Image 1 (cartoon, helix red, strand yellow):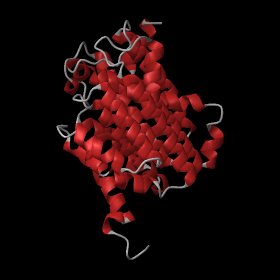
Image 2 (cartoon, one colour):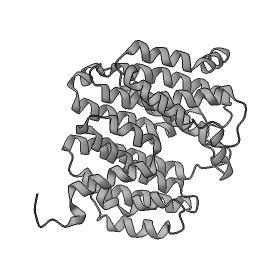
Image 3 (cartoon, one colour):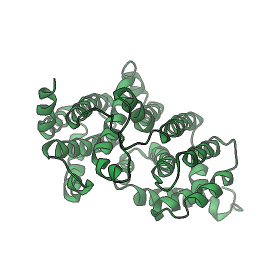
Length: 329
């Protein structure tokens, strides 16, 4: 390391910031990402933060769609290196000066830090991340003008939205896992669609869980004319594919398996809670308790290496989802 390196460009302090801000902007991913092997923990953590910046722009209720599109485009260009990062940072911070989430604002202020970390990764990982951020940023820009109270046009548009915001992350994880594990690279061949379903299942859970808050701000990401029952059935099908995806991960890659199984299990329990209840008016009604999360976190230590235990959990924890799915067949 160059001893004259500016303190703000110290790789260790950059990574320390990444780890700290991850805990501030996502309770779930702050739990799951550290489970990954050290060689890919930083890569996945960095990707999450890049995606979170795109997501913050999308979530800013005070911005009109055209402004969101402009900022998303600037962010993508800064990430790809076609413009200096300052050309994104100034306009974005100015547009979000009244934004209420201080942690997400702090993350945006540290975009240069996040991009410096990105540029330390192997070329193949950087290429996979750039592809993911490009699809997500362009996709969200496409959907900025489609935010309505009525919801998305139909099931096809809903699936497309879930792909650009989360299915593509499933593809990215598959690329990173394959770069790290030649065994997984072999196993996943021909089953790449399972990766998309894994990401989509997590996104569908978020859409259902967040629907009261979205409704309050005049937005719905659900497909118009589709009932809650039909959506739960679709999410359950995606969960079944997600289970198949996790089982393809090599048995000795406990960190990768725990990372996926923890996110999967929390989604299963959340959807089951939604399926068991009636209409809910607040996200807190279906939020998992901290105790439930920690019990399941501990369970993943035992279960992640054992396909039978993981399948048994899924069967036991999705009884109402299974019943609803059978009713709707």
